[in-house]
Amino acid sequence: MAAGELLLRVRSRVGEARVEADTDWTVVELREKAAERLGGKGERLSRDRQLLVGDGEAAAPLAEEDATLGTCDLRRGDVVYLRLSAESEAALEATSNAPTRPKKMTIEELVAKQVRVERQKDAGCALLSIDRNAAAQFQAYVGAAMAFSAPRCGWMYGTADDEKGVHVDFIYEPPQQADKLDRFHVEASEEEKDAVETIVAALGVKKVGVILAQSQKPRDYIMSDFEIEWMAREQAMGDQRFVTAVVSLQSFEDENGKENKEVHFEAFQLSDTCMKLYREGWFVSQEEPSGITRVKDDVIVAGKDVREIDNDFFLVPVKITDYASSLSCSFPIENRLTAYDAGELKAYLKRTSGKDFNQKLSDFHLLFFLSKHLDINDVKIIAESIRANVPIMDGYRIIIESIAQV
Image 1 (cartoon, rainbow, N blue to C red):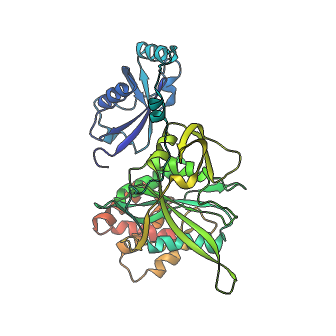
Image 2: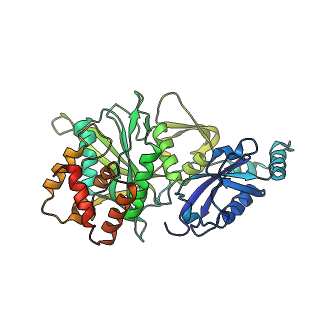
Image 3: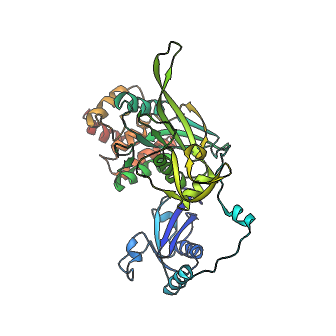
């Protein structure tokens, strides 16, 4: 991970701070900068939330004070807990609880303070390019196997270019469930998440967006409030180019009046205003999904004070195209209702017998499968060899072929 790319959420008893850190910062530097953001004096950092309970002595420290963050196994979006000094906590709590005298405001100041929701023309991402095989694999499963009967999401990994474009090499599909209202929930274990992050880091790619296949249940809106909040939560963890691809089955009538259906691929980002409302906690949950988002206070939409916003106001379209990644996408995809065992590995090795060993293993889904049979550090070495285009050690060939029983 390059310097400056470590976005951490630092939580204390009196609030949370988002810190854009460098991996060469020391633990002391992170503690001081996070405490400064919160307006107090920091004492200790830990990955354990017990730091904020009682005296916090049960929580192990994040690392030695002079250790750099790059050695602390921290990833973008991780939560770190900060213990502030007792004096700082008392002062900050007193300030937040102190009664304030209302300030007289002019009409102009009141209007200026209100949030205006308007359509945003330009997205932070200029173009989303998805590997055509990765897109086809995802579409085929949600279409042929699931018949668009339920929503399904995936995490898109790839790279960004110098012209605000994003290139997706593959789509990881985490374990997930959806209820009858099409609200879906990811159920990936920490072990699985760690394996994915280790592999993608070794391959030199990062999470650049998410993809969502919507069910074919009738709807008169593009995105539901649940989907908008999910998009916001994901986009808040990425950079300004983080994008969401949406796959849906659309109905239309042909020239003879016969109803037909076709698959649509679209891409969006959420507007800056939407992200501001999300980050500041304006969203109000609803019992059933709808095409509007409810907020806790008045905002201005089309010159009117409202608390219900048409979700279309939040969507900023992004151009989408396909391309051919250097990574393959032909090994069976993880966490599906299809075969995923050593037999599939055997069939894959036979199917790719004409390729050299590096080419055979240049597939994230295969590497993820191997992480369930090999030590993750061995999979990391293999992925790093693929990235550097150096031959994979022969010992790994023997081990992998023995797993496949060939």
